[in-house]
Image 1 (tube, helix red, strand yellow):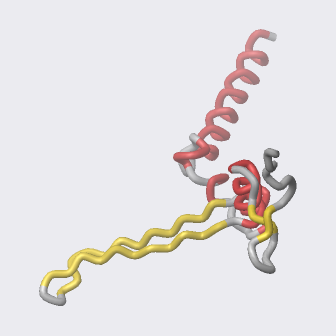
Image 2: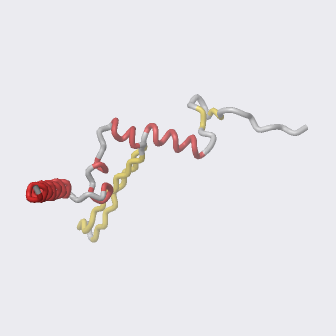
Image 3: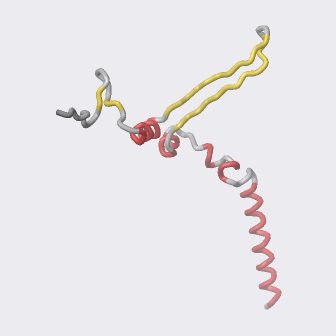
Length: 108
């Protein structure tokens, strides 16, 4: 007689069911979010030479927006638009429109 592995969620103690696969874990992390914090310090004879603070948050975009985190919308590295560039582009469009209006009036 061959025994089969139990089907359905696996309970650990009185806690929620343990995740069944990587997709479940990823879904839970993106839904709830996870924060990893760490500090690295380099010291020589009790003199702090270097401190690196590492903060990592993993969450879905929707969850991040709910928490008020939207830095990527304004970051030039992510958005591809440098700060001040939209203003320069708008000014350039206005100049081109004025030139076109002037050329249209000159032809008449």
